[in-house]
Image (cartoon, rainbow, N blue to C red; front, side):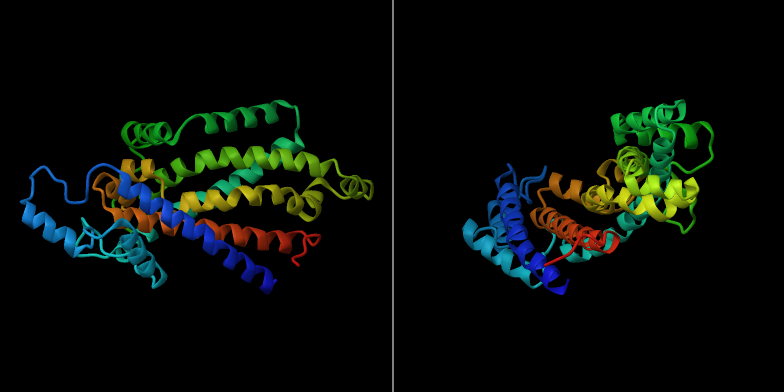
Length: 307
């Protein structure tokens, strides 16, 4: 196992390097610059600022300089938030995205697996059709529609929950953003669980367990659940990374100071280092979570062996 993990980590280095290079070139190829504002700076001042941030150097030299900083764990200074480095901004914003995204994914897993299992046990019944129709609706409706509807219903009409992020320690401000993030994931997880559970329940060893007198609950808990969630693990790797790094729409609507907001503002302001830092952080998170998924495969399914 240790050798496999080491090989995967070493294999991720070229992938991350390619992502950094492509992101660096694409960001710098965008029109405009980090110092383009409504008020035009004097040429001498702009030249001094570009020299201070090494933007006057040739592109290959800038790339090598940036790669050297990334190797040391330094994503450079932010061009807009000049009192903070990019690492400091990510460290400050990620806990908000992690809190909202972690709760949303936990809620989506519990509800989605339960709904998918229920649909599989009642295959081709009205319950199955109702659950799958609801899940298809959740997949079809985008988050930028779901979030305002939740605000309109629960905050404006019913006045049960706050419409925005207040930053206090209570649970009420978390409900609507968590629900908005979780609903599409519930739909995907429910459909994946249903399809996988139907295949598992048709297996010979499940039929043998039923012939021995085991109840449905015991069969699901001890024999069917683990193999049924294996296909779900492949989906969870990138899904968890996406939801933990923040939804741009959800964070903008509810005013959550997470990574999604910083990414949008960095792109609009041509804050090269901030955008690159978040891209690298997101790519690293995907690699780490995919590795974790592969390890979980071996722990859940004893047939999987790493050589």
